[in-house]
Length: 235
Image (cartoon, rainbow, N blue to C red; front, side, top):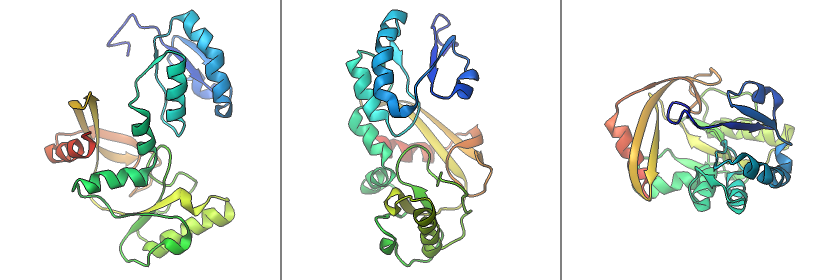
């Protein structure tokens, strides 16, 4: 941000004092925990006006749609798409159905409502969090790929039994081996402006076979990947 606009003044806000300490923002503010988000936004609305803050940039998470609505009421600009798009992206199962309906090759994905819904199928399957940020199971130890649908059901049953996490919080997805690509794109009023394609080399948690946030990645030129992502992301 500073490279693009050196005169910009950056104000960092977080409810984690340690994360805030590591921020490179010009000024920093410790917020109340996320469960008090409505109070936070109302309290800092006046502060935004006093500090002449023009743009609110949110982190990733499950509350984006609500925060977008509140930010709109606070008359702040946000770098976020329409609320309907955000809500779609927060549900990984619903999102997977969109490119599939457009003929884009998509891993077979099952919405888990209860353990009895999981099909008895061979192949390699991974349970994943259905909602929120990231793409792999983020609720503790992950198993590397190598189990059938029954193995995935066992792991979901563990979280349901031991941690009280409902089976409906998960999906069961077909695992596809090979290189792991990610494609980010910037759109303006339905027109593709910029595409960045990179290959994930090392996953964030260091476990093999996971496909989520990368600890190490490299930018690559893969036109086929970019073309697939353009079809999948087109309005």
